[in-house]
Image 1 (tube, rainbow, N blue to C red):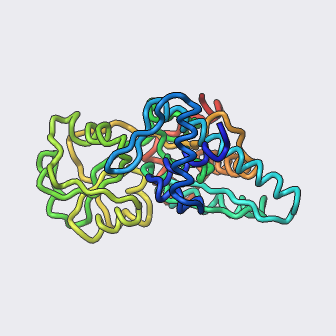
Image 2: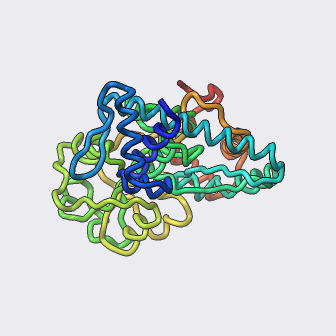
Length: 326
């Protein structure tokens, strides 16, 4: 196997098609196609499936993809290491996905400390919705995520340090016609704006509707791949959403959004620090993790900030002392 073939494989997965991958890599489609064919010839097994909607992966292709993503990420780290030796003043980058309620509470306390500790590192911060961040983590364009920890069967290639568990709740704008609803059945004729990754749809819908014996409303489910877009629509329309309780308790939302007092209860989620498995974090990533954990400890043990205390009451803290699990 050649490095460029693995890079082609990882980029096709990230971009969704050979054409988009070629554009991102700055090469021709024919070059990418030829590289992938050579890779399959070497593997002596089909790796890709080609259909009208683009490129898919066979089971063997999925497993090789995980290796390709780790290899390309490690090569990028190696190149950055050499760049630091060539020019000690060269700008480094740390990209972090952050789930919205954490972004609105703890992030503003971590970033100044990180900038003071590593002023030469450029931070790149992303909306931490899982539908966006998990693919970025796997293919290497994202270094860390502080966000929802996926179930074990969806964590291939990743590992997590759990920090908080929290409940989910159905939300609507203040004054919504259904704000006094007490059951999900009363909400089946409303439009919903939700966020979930394609491979999470079944699990997500079961948590929200199926476990309560309610059929998901047909033609009423809409997707948002941005937290700000999702919440703007909840604030300004009669669309409903499904959000973490701690997000509802943040100052930016509690005056505009109400959690419906439904009889149904939903499975809890966990937020933690997620990164690629079997990969040593960069010095910048280690620094960010250490500062974030220190802020979590300060929040839990002694924070007297009213907003932070309010949010803290809506979560259950998980002891992070055990570190990253496998």
